[in-house]
Length: 328
Image 1: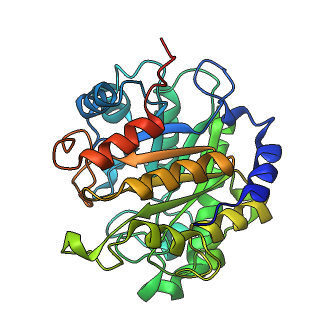
Image 2: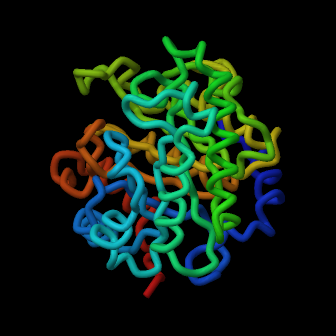
Image 3: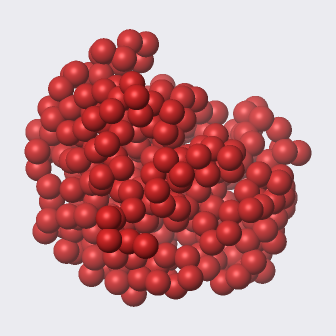
């Protein structure tokens, strides 16, 4: 297992004065912010918090990508679903294009009105001055989402870059748009995302999605059943590829951008070593935040409902990220 402390020191130095490196209320984060994905359900967020023994800092939520009429307004998500979120911040998955749309059209301005409407809606539903993180076309280096430009869709990369830049300009151009922070959020198990970089001035954060998928889980499981080996493959220069977790941490440092783990999940009763390694990596490298995929939708990583089936995994997560024993 390899941790990258030197890069951690660099990232901490880069982040120390960033307004978006603080917890809600303005307190300096002593360690990475904790987020959760709970299927756009506040109830699931509360269940996770009760299980963990502490509130989360951020909630990952997803904007509709099926129809523009649903995409345009964040009210249903920000108020109806998460209206009782208190000080928890929302992080928005916002596709630059939705199903049936194209980057070729997006780059010409065909969807500017939709983007502008959504930007205004998000701002209206998040009053204040705190930054709002936008994961624009997350996991763009795959081809499983309509907005992906990886794998079989790499010919679209130039149009994606042009569209990102235009999207960035529209969001920043609305009143209050300076609050938006744009996250270049890629995924493991796909194409090299670095050629998709839209330019340093158009990105504020670098993120990465990490899921352990051992063969034992069946279905989409493909990798080693050894959690220690799986972790080493993600952090070693001789691991899965040059854009593994360690590689993307280095890429973020080269761009002078804060790094975060936007989604991560583990499966099964033997994942404790992976969880412990992730906790050590986050802290050693000054990672800004991490968001756990507490759901069985898309990836079967739910923890709060699997304590009995996965006792060691659950205990490791609670020990690493739950309320410290000395906390009130």
